[in-house]
Length: 78
Image (cartoon, rainbow, N blue to C red; front, side, top):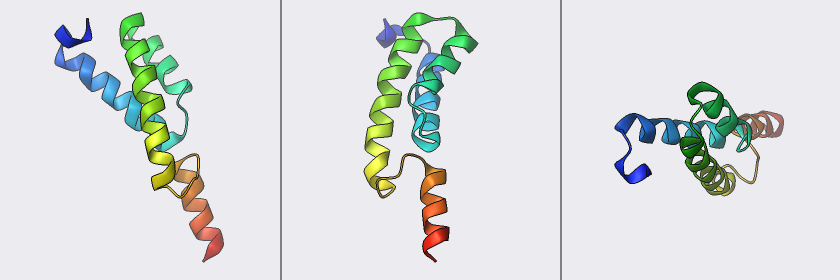
């Protein structure tokens, strides 16, 4: 299980979660991670982390889907 996984597995899941929240791509990021590792178990945990991070980040970014959408909205407003 993931509780006995290597620190690298935790780093990959965290990296996928962070990237999905910033990019607004909670489905694409775990798929990319699976392509890199070929490990279904890490991909499943990355999916959960990516969706959780995206749902948490959305209200913090003013309801925008990604960091780049939030930047564009700020630029257009000012």
